[in-house]
Every structure is written in structure tokens, then in C-alpha cells.
Image 1 (tube, one colour):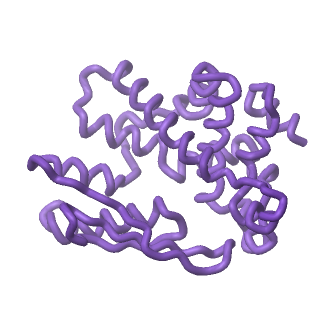
Image 2 (cartoon, helix red, strand yellow; image 1 turned 135 degrees about the horizontal axis):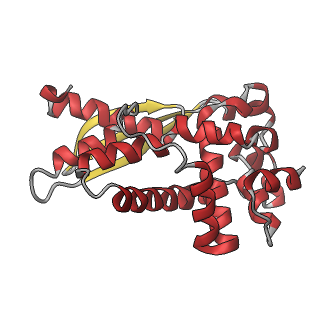
Length: 228
């Protein structure tokens, strides 16, 4: 079955354990902790950075007349959860995920947050196995085929807040995970957002990313009500 996924990706792994790791959700790894199995969370972290950088580079080169704010919103649309979940569906990635029992019963194979995280993990696996060229080919094939030119759908509150805060010098934003509750298939994360050491927003969500976005949205409403 793993060969089927490699064919869909268009890349043959030298180290197949990297791809297997990319498909291992934390709920699955937690149930098998005694085997030393690792989840895909570290790969997701790496893949998120690689994806953001490569998409930013593409937009910078492709659209020399677009301003920073517009490029930022274009990138946000291209790397958002909904977009990545669509890529996962194109690859039929949900079929190949390794999930814990609770997540399986809770419909995790169709959950956008899990699918999006898995795509980022696969990007990182490609990078670690075949270098930046392998990651670039994946992103060119599945991400850069739909560049939003006019109708930007995604609202990236974290980026919007960063742009507003940077209008003043020496401003420091910090997102802190302060709570995590619920079973593996229905997690809720709680994040506090600090600006220069003071809490300016609290967010909750089904993933850390969603909670951070929610905290940033609350901070914008508090600090910049004219922007909402």
C-alpha cells in the first residue's frame, strides 16, 4: 500500500521509514509508546517551515510588483489548512494514515487538521530523504498549481497581527501553549498570546495552529478594533 502512495506522490523513498513516520499520527504513536514509535509532529514542524519558505520564494520571484502584504495573504491561502487538506485528498493520504483507535472512530481520516499536518510531514520526509530538490518537486506538483491571484479566501490572523505590531519598534509577540485537554480524537488546545510580556489574547482550537490563530484574532480585536 505504501508503494501506491509513493506512486501518487511521484517520489520513491530510499528510506521508507521516513514516509512511514510521516503517516504516524500522535494518537497512534501514543498507543504504541512502549515500542518507541515516534509521531509525525517533528516532521510536521520541519515541513511547515520548508513549505512556507519555498512558497514565499516562488511568490517573490513570480510577482515582483506585488506588495508585501498581498504576497503574505497569497502565501497564507496556499499553505492554509483547507488547501493542504485538499492536497491530501488528491493523494488519498487519509487512507494511508496510522491513527489511534479513538481518532479512527472519531473520523480522523477525514479531519482537515490531521490531513494538513500529514502533508507537511510528507514534505519534510521528502526533504530528508532526497534533499531540497525532492521537496521542491512535491510543492511544485501539488501546491504551486493553484496560486490565488485575486480572490484571497484565507484570513491569517497571526500574520495580520505581526504586520500591525511591527509598525512600532521592539515589539515582541509570544504564543504559549497553556492547556491541552480531551481524548486524542477530540483534542482542545489553549494558547495565550503575549505582547511584550502582557497577555493580549487567549485562543482555543482543535490544533495548536488553530488556537494560535484564535488568540491572534482576539488580540487584533482588543488592540486594533478599527481593523476588525
